[in-house]
Image (cartoon, rainbow, N blue to C red; front, side, top):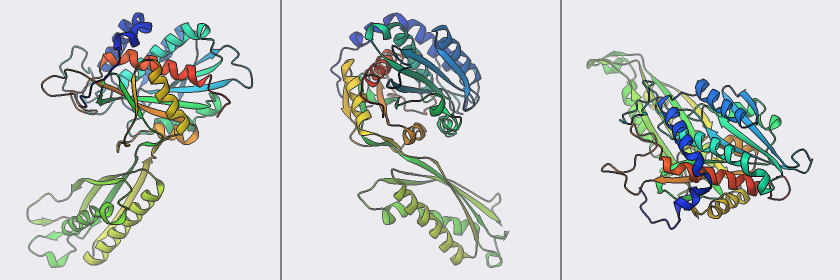
Length: 411
């Protein structure tokens, strides 16, 4: 964990929403105990829709499957010149076993809120509560759409919401989202103009021989040998085909074939991922991967089939909105700084940023005393969202909405 000191008064930041926090903590723990996977977030979506409805918001359910959108109209929101902003939180959990021993640990075997989406959902609901009761006093004029998205974890819920008419039905001049970040201490936030998260590609390669007796390898192309040669070549692509000034990662994550010590298998499967920050790098890596497969196929006599899927684009912030995100964080008392580099993790908020100006923020949640084993990383079986970050996210979302509705002409 990044243990650098943070000079901000967390209690002062939380003070305006102190009365909301007990219920938000209870909600967060309830969501954590009842995790739901991609496009299965029926219970979570129901809780969100009910909470938004009780606030008097216009609520739409089933957007992109299990997504929910709540709309707050402030002041002269119906004027043609009125601004609008989308604030997004993800709702889904991960298909993994939770090993934490908390009283609110997962009640659903094989499902775990190991990425903190329970916290994101709770923070955005808290922001909706706070804006409902303060927007008149703040003199806000325009529309805030609270976007609760399903299926961020590899299933493209953001794209599904967009396909279902998200931005036609709920026009947004700009969109914002955050993610808790255990590597940053509580009270610190980071973002940057340009790429903040990587594009995520997946490749699945089938290497096929004929199969045969291990003592007679001359009768069949050796699928294991061909697969091994291909894996070795794949691991040179980034080092030898990508400009050293660019950033990319290619990792082989699975190689599987054979069941017996004396049988040459007929087929071997190779799976992996590629991460990069621009389409030119994606194109070069995919082309090099396919060329390597063709070369090994010709040399070995094995048949090699490549399936290459670009499932998430890079998450790219627009400069003005990245600045607004940092200014909003600073305004509520957080320690805000420009991120020194992008992360190779991926995020399907990228689809929304392809359609609208916006920014994605990392919200530090690192505990000052994380315990003997240190702060748990995202996707760790013992990971748990830090409830002390709840008021920080609520305040940031509210300040972003305030500044967005006073940010000049629509984008």
